[in-house]
Length: 375
Image (cartoon, rainbow, N blue to C red):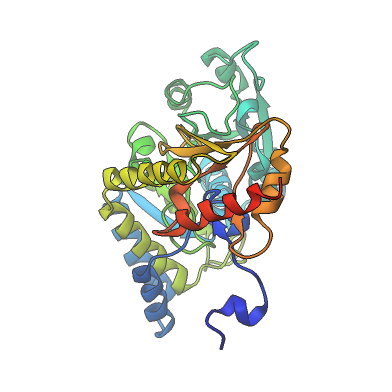
């Protein structure tokens, strides 16, 4: 075999200076997590027994009543949809008639809509969209109360405390929980990309959410095809009953022993990581980038938070107006040491240090200096 599998396949690798995007593989697993996968794959276990033990340990580690590992955050939304309907009608999702599922409603704020909402409609439930994705007429508690009816199974809330991709116009988390509790409707929070901070693992559930859904393959640095549902036992019991390896709606959403064990280990390592030291490391990468590009056509500014609203600094690399950001992104991805960045505004691209490793910022600097001669 070649030095790495991608050389064998003929697929070029890249330096990820963009962030934990799924389309470029999320995060990289640690050596400890990779070793956990190797050990898990080397033995046979009874999957339900493994789930019972691992889920119990994760719930305890994250200060929650229950936990469930699935094969991605979107899968977690799908399972929570089925769980909410099953809870509402007091019967396992396996026995829910299609008519019951189709008339059940999941309330989502218009300002929170995104492509991952297909996980809700894929289960068969109706998405009840309320409000507007702007500040002309922000939602009120009364608006939410008026939207709740006999078919309401849950309210899905998409987290974005620091901005990120959430549009204005939605109701606050606190007001959402107040109304939901008054009407005995569960609240499910999509926190797929909301780590850091690590307290996302318990902050929302301690504040009243019935479940949170988190990506295992983003900043938790678990397997890319992993997700995590945390929350209250009254809802998570239905998630467990609906999810793999049970037959029915969740059977096709397979989670192997490798993902289960590796996700557990990744969470354990994440909880043991010093967030202050990591923040200082990220700041140092930005300073190194600024120093390395000094005197070039590029100038560097520190921005905070990052594009997902995560509390971590990133760098904005700015260049003259006659240079297209699209052209810069294209050149960064050409030749050797391809660098993936992203852009949200004209004449600048962003370098996010959260997915870089020691020494890679030097390769990023070198790449920018190389393309300076081409623009």
